[in-house]
Amino acid sequence: MASVPEPSPSTQPLPSPSENSPGRRYGGADPTQRRERRRAALIAAGLDTFGTDGYAKVSVKGICDHAGLTQRYFYESFTDRADLLVAVYDDCVAFVRAATVRSAAEIADADPEFLGSSEGVAAERVPDVARAALGAFMSCLADDPRRARVMLVEVVGVSPEIERVRMRAIHDWAALILALARGARPPSDRERLASVGLVGAVTQLLVDWYVAGAGESDAQRFALDEILDVCVELFVAAYGRLLT
Image (cartoon, rainbow, N blue to C red; front, side):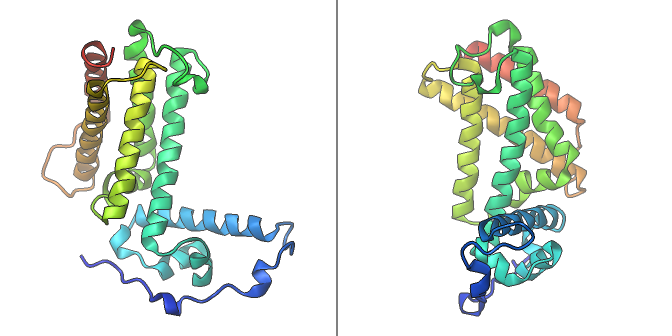
């Protein structure tokens, strides 16, 4: 399906001078705060529309209508739909990562800031920490199919620029695995490869789960609990053989 065309930059209206006047307040908010609120509203609208209808089917006008804003406010924060998609994706990743780290830290009986500053999770606690962290990750996607669609489907293959964003996120997840497994100890190339491989395994299993659930595949949809069990076993095995 063809993507929705972007308007020509020459047709994008400029913000009114009064809106950007320094220090001018409306409803108790200064111009910077109002811009931040509009940007947040557009990201929320992007999550709703990209995560429900799909990136290719959504126009800038549709996003703005959903947010209750005019198009000039869209271009105040974003250059085009792809720019908004990156912001929505980054917001989803930040939300899921916070839940993942929080759950891992609770089981490890540590402050969420402990990652990277310790010796890593003790071997006897790896199964429980892996289950808590992976369970939180998967719950975030199961509880909000919009996030699942954006993170697992909509950002794939859009453009080389967005592929770089997605690859950055993959390596950030791999770094989190290494921080849990090794703490502050520098990883080897073998350990880095193992952590990226674990991210890839989890991601593909969840892509299969999402696509099968959306009725877009003839493949069997396995229960999320079964996927979690397999992923925990993969992480435990990798910890014992490749990450310590």
